[in-house]
Image (tube, rainbow, N blue to C red; front, side, top):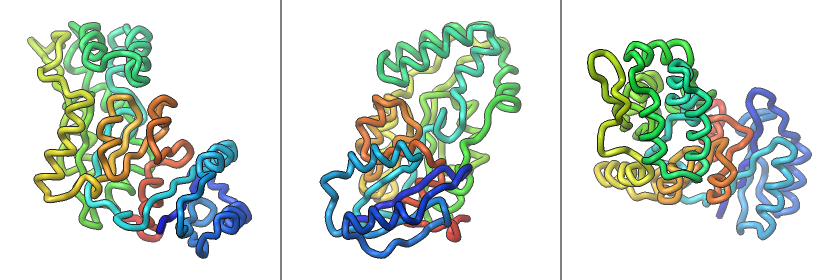
Length: 290
């Protein structure tokens, strides 16, 4: 048994009941259940449809995301999330680089690294090197003035935590940012890289070992083992190439507004919804949101 979930952007909810009904009929699905009026609906399926990805592509052109998940174990017990461009709308290192006057150079490297064109560790080392001499106080300034939460994050964390879920923020970014974001959203723990500081200024170096793709996989393995959970009990969400390891290992790996090369490797792709999509695909209705 499976559940098909259709959803749109909460900012411009436009899910047509006729569209849901026609797809449900075509696939011989169960009765439609509206999780949020005009925004998200689901129906059960006996088998995985052969034309799933063709339909997905057609729906993308209409601004609708389609996710099909097994009914068993649909609600997860652990959330493992990337931070930059996932739980927040920015890439922290790009914002710091803007303040340091090397924004364009760093953004170019970031984009290539997130798309999997560059080695993550080498790209991070190069970008941090360009921040050498930047005043440490700029971190607080960027946090206060430039960093905004991704829509739906508070509902996602609040609802999953209310249902006993353990939440970890695991970032290839920096502890100075993850600590604040984790506290604001209610994550149970956070892991990231450390920007080294001397005399109140960034040294241009990052603490070792660097937390990259493999460290995110390790975090999933370590935390789930500590909690006595299977990898299938985990929902992971991210957008970059360095997230692919944990997205592949998790029971539900969500590519959120991801780079095309990243999304292509994931079965759960959210391009129109926000972070509340992660609740809808688990069967939570808007009335369930904490």
